[in-house]
Length: 172
Image (cartoon, rainbow, N blue to C red; front, top):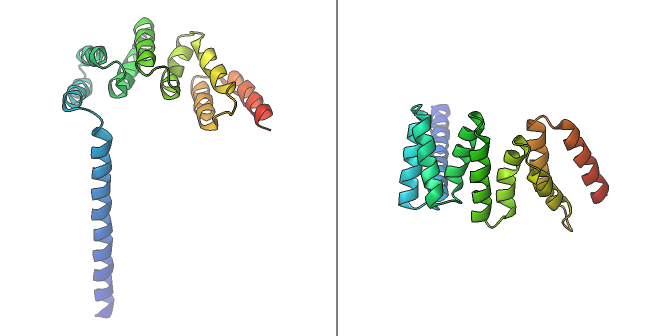
C-alpha cells in the first residue's frame, strides 16, 4: 500500500511539473508572437496557410506584400527568402535582402540573416560582411561561428578553413 501511495505522489508531482512546463511554454510562445501586431500576425498566418497548402505563388505574393508594408519583418522575410532560394529567383532574393538590411539599419543580426543570400548569389557583399565582423576591435565569436556554419552549409569548406585560421591567429 505505501508503495502505491508513493507512486501516486510521484505521478502527481510529475503531472504538476508537466502542466507547469506547458504553461511556461505557452507564455513564451505568446511572448515571442506578441512583438507582432494583430494585423501582422493575421497576414503571416494567412501566408503560412497558403504555403502549407501548396499554394506557393499565392504565399509568395502574400509574403511580398507583407514586406512592402513591413520591410524589416523577419517572420515574412525568412520564409520568402527560402521560397526564392528554392525557386532560384536570385534577383528577387537580392532585392528583398537589400530592403531588409536597410529596414534594420544594416545591424549585425540582419547582416547574418542575408549573408547566405549574398554567398549563394555570388554577390561580393558576403565578403564585406565577413570582413566587417573580422575587423572589429573584438571579434564576436558567435557571429563568426554563424558565418562559418553558413559557409560550410554552402560547400565553401576552403573559405571556412581560411577564416578559421585568420580568427585563430587574431584571437591568440
